Length: 398
Length: 187
Image 1: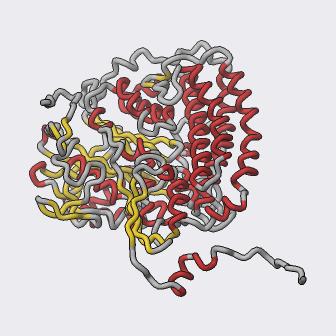
Image 2 (image 1 turned 180 degrees about the horizontal axis):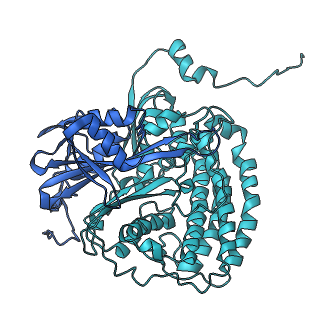
Image 3 (image 1 turned 90 degrees about the vertical axis):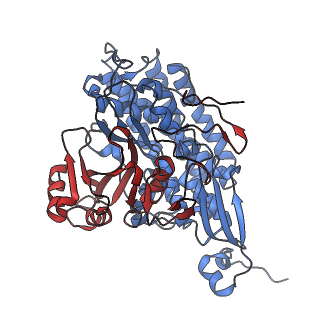
């Protein structure tokens, strides 16, 4: 019997790539497929109508609005501090960051921002970055789930649990915090918070290497994500994509690097896509930007914890936070959320109740690019693309 | 470039189609005519001094006291760092406002200038009822051509973010519950 010699593994994808099907295949009957609104790969109640020809997706049209809760209309009936819990429920994986965006917008409009103490600002940064890590952990875990890897999800939630415990010890809540509020934060840090957080960071940092070994460089995972769903840099800017989706396309843009963001004195990098495994702007790049951002957040938290020393006597809650009146003026303020830029446009009229509250959800803008990316891709890649954009429907629909 | 200089350049280029400017505020803004908006938008995007390539947000507002609707476009111009290293830098930002009468709320679409405007305009139509003309994702409704709704269903009646919006008492046989005290559900 002759020995079987395999020179190299056959590339099973060659006859399925978009270019080759055009030449070898001929169009058959088209079929409309509803992906969602109740589908685990769509991360919530997102419905995407796919026009398919066999395995090829010719067109994908997202339909949203299933989770629309009139957050903007409710904002016109509430004072700012009463609206904070509603912001929690927009991007429910990053409640702290949402609180921060709205609180900062109100403070900038009313001029309260000059009266926020250094300690309150540092606590805000610590919690915003901790929440960024927690949010990216969910993104990392569920992206593995989307592509058929179950274990990373369990790893990610094991670490996220520590962060949620930290949040619980501080404000009592594990998902919808309302901790960062107008004028500062609702309460000072609990005892030993700094030590426990340092312990967590020491524990967490090596875990990122574990994630990379487990999923990032996994051959199957790279096959499913590299060169899939490429978003060019010009498209990314044209569609006003933000956050890891924008940076995955090679654009190193981060609001935290702008003057006035509160992060001026912190030393951290802005990770962006290099096309390491495929092309710049593919699913793998977007995924890997999130992994790197977790490491950068850890750096920021360490620096902020160091700076907390010596500020123990400062007040973290401003007494005007609940009685503040909004002047007859407007403001548009954006901050860098885990998913991109969350912006609030506030228009006051002299009373405590605003005239208009507009929320610009990063997921909303990021999702609008699906229609462009999901043309002429394989059906299985749609889940990879939507997962890499990482939308939270609570924020898309508000 | 400061907002004042941007307004000066726009006035030089478009004359009295730049209606008004407000700089003494936390949100400096330039008000322009609705008819001239696509030309101004193209100028803002393509002129070498402007280069506004990033549409951050479109906000529709109901100014009931002036009997007007207002569309606010917040823009950023970003570019790669000069030496090619480090993060992108912000060149400048500006805000354009367009006010249209409530009974004839029509603004030309700029989705062909910034594709981000596509969904934003659909949302602004859905929530406020501002008609964006020549929108790429339009449909024919009972009252003519309009952008496709995005958050509400296609057969929804009324525009929820208008100040005089009345909450519907039922939708397809589903009785409505309202917290706003504007209308009371009848069961």
